[in-house]
Length: 408
Image 1 (cartoon, rainbow, N blue to C red):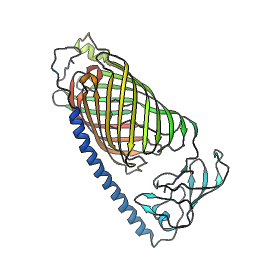
Image 2 (cartoon, rainbow, N blue to C red):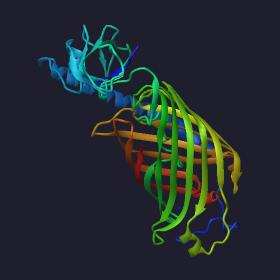
Image 3 (tube, one colour):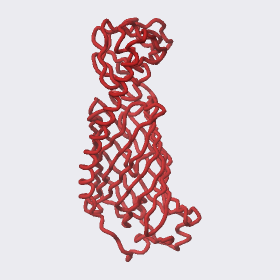
Image 4 (cartoon, one colour):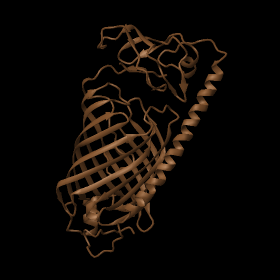
């Protein structure tokens, strides 16, 4: 069947990599991460229930307002009350397919912000776009819940697509070394302020699957890369260090499961200004060339859990082969509109060089998500673990601060 989505942390700091005798803090925060993860999962569940309840209340209010109103047609978007109360056609633009209407012979059930078409519903295309790829003008609709907030689009059958819009397996919101664009001001009481930045992203090269940008199904090949730099605003904005990441991953999504498998390279470098200021002449060539496999499960369109394992056949500078990541997110999947939505995520990153201790990273704030799944967030971050800059990986850091993030 075919799918139709209707709009319906001192100032001078010399890491132990330079002065091996410097004090180190323990890295056994993996257990803390597990405890935090359980707590966050409970909080995510409660937040999701509140979010759904608020949406349901809004839908009921809309239905009450529309009860005494005459039927209306909407060009481009179908509203809750139109779908719920009036069986006549709903007009709109269905993505790259064309202009037409959705006809339901009976009032369509509405729960929260979802409507469920039935097998009797029909999409009638009146004006085909030149890029339309099917021949019939009337097709049955899949009997499954679809989001009202989506812009109208027709996914069509699985097909090969170059440079597809959207991703099947997105970067972890609280992953501290994920490719994205970000700037976060973090403070540690014993060292002061740092600015952690990222300049990069992930994009699709090739897909075999549906055309949907928000919830695509099938297989996709992605390329990723980022420069992950630390600037010290308390030392004339000197560059303290930078990690560079590049990778290529295959991703699969067959909801509610999604998977990724691939390769990434990361290498760490101290900044020139830091070397000149500290007189450091010795550095560790921290390098990982890793094979990774990850899986994500979407409990709802807002809540997901994930886990990832990585093995680096080539490693240097103190790195060891194995690493593990796992976490949970309250991260609404569909476009949010101008009002945005809350976002909350926790990630624990365990590494063999710390006897499988590691870091805990928590991000919470507000997010706006667009029609292709791109997301802009503002919020707060708490980090506890080995240095975020892997040139200084044997230094312990505990930061709290705020900033902004953008994922393509």
